[in-house]
Image (cartoon, rainbow, N blue to C red; front, side, top):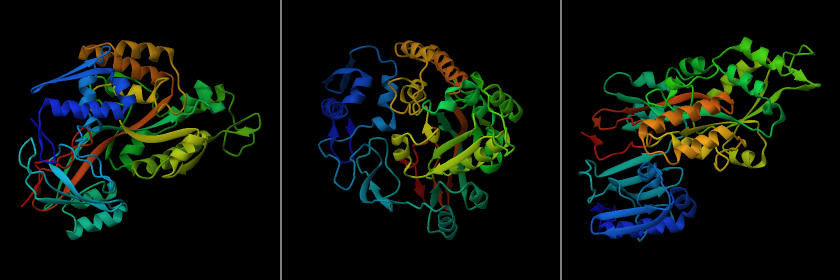
Amino acid sequence: NVTFSSGRKMDAQAVKECLDDLVAVHERAAGDLKISNIEADGQILTITTSEPVPALMNYLSDPYGCIIDMEAGITADGKVVGTGPYIVKELETDKGVTLVKNENYWNGTPHLDKIYVKTITDGDTMTMAMQSGELDAAYGLPYASLPLFKNEPYTISSCETSRSFFAQMNYATEALQDDDVRAAIASAIDKENFTSVLMDGNGTAAVGPFPASFTFGDDTVTAESYDPANAKELLKKAGWTDTDGDGYVDKNGKKLTIRWLTYPSRQELPLLAESVQATMKDVGIDIQVNCTANHQDYLDKGDWDIFAGAFVSAPTGDPEYFFTTHCLDSSTKNRGGYHSDVLEALEKQMSVTFDSTERASLGTQMTQTILDDHAFVFASHLKMSMVSGKGVSGLVAHPSDYYEITADLDKE
């Protein structure tokens, strides 16, 4: 049985009804998953697809693909009835949420009766709240604050995740249509300095979208390393030189200015923009940073040349997800209009391949394709760190960067 947080125990038929509703509401998702029919027989749920979908099980286990009690619905104040160890009692937008124990949780008994999750956007405020004991635990502390909690009574749980910080090129920008310019930009980003100095070691320099711990990860692909001299040569080859001595390259009387769009909600992204602006200046590229929470408006209007963001590239351990969301003609997050005949052909293979070893090999080939095209530049992988205070146990960093509050969380 699957127990929902409403307290109702549901058999396969009830789960089928939930999935049917989800399919009806999310037609596009159903199209991606090729679900044609769902049958329920006692405790057996059979999902039939119109064509092979090797990653179906991965998609169904994605946190975004969770089972929701559609009969209970989603309330006007944003509460969702799901299957987790805690139930939302009170939700205050931009302030936090109060959770209470799900007495009918299907996977054990949650230890705590109530959890208060506070939204604190200012890093210094969060740090002081943790030090004063106002908070029992924290996620998202400024990297500079973490050393304050390295000794007892505090505990820090950290792990590398597949949340990647990367930049994608806008192919509508004339200068970026030249592969030599894109390669020069890739060569002018100092990933090691960004992760070791600005991030204080709380991240790993990236090659592609997947960490080295994956069989199709960074150890299986190559990309441009930081090489300012090579970047200058590539720019020169593309016809960009400093003709007026102002320190920036120009061509046909126009300075090479790149509009770098990003957002502030991930502390790594403003730091990346700061790093890129400095190293690009060294090779003669003028980077104009626009770090705004309103970034979607600029994306929609096309007022950008390079967009830097964060994304969990493999939330269920499969490589296909990143490419289908970001790199294909049909991808909703292919914001820069990137196209590759090679990548499209590899995805056709991936979409019908069930063997995990073969899927990993295809994932490597697909990653190498976008790196060779310099369509994306991957800067780092997030090192997720959570701080627990005195008496707190069971708060463990998870590679998928999603599972934080679990039934194991406890406080003496």
